[in-house]
Amino acid sequence: MIYIRLFLSFAKVGLLGFGGGLAIVRLIYDSIQPFMDMSREMFANIVAISQITPGPLAVNTATYVGYEAAGLLGSFAATVGVVLPEFIIVSIVARMIQRFKDSRVIKGAMTGIRPATMGLIGAAVVTLITPAIAGESRLGSGLISKLGANASSGFASFILGSSIDIISVIIVAVTVILITKYKKSPFAVLIVMGILGAIIGV
Image (cartoon, one colour):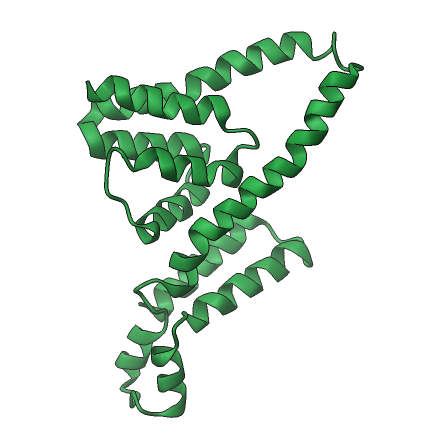
């Protein structure tokens, strides 16, 4: 039954999704595949939307995929599946953390999980980088068309003929600088870049 499959698939995400957020992007992407043929570009769009909407990435994605796969009941099954293991684990950990906070075993486990989490984030980057900077759409192509620029001109040829999306690469670089160097709000930066993308057009 698809509802049970959705529940179990996203329960795996909730149970094994150490690090949360971007650290479990690859796990989420792999869990989606049995239910829908989702390209990396479409998945990247879902991740982008999840970053600017309320709620955790895993919950938002589970809700969307469940709905697409089996309607409202599918959405409910997937969402409960991803939330329930986290709720149970956090409830247990919250009770026991004080008792075992000085345990060398617990400290060792946490020390081992930290670099693994960085590896998971790296896997998320690998999953999302291609649709982000080399997807089918090209930021700026719409603006060039509106301005009537000759596609053979230097700038237009550079934008339209490149194997990567030059403007998207610039947005990635500017976003990193604004957040890491200038400490700007990630939420504000996402909104500004979204508005910029809407103005430039695809």
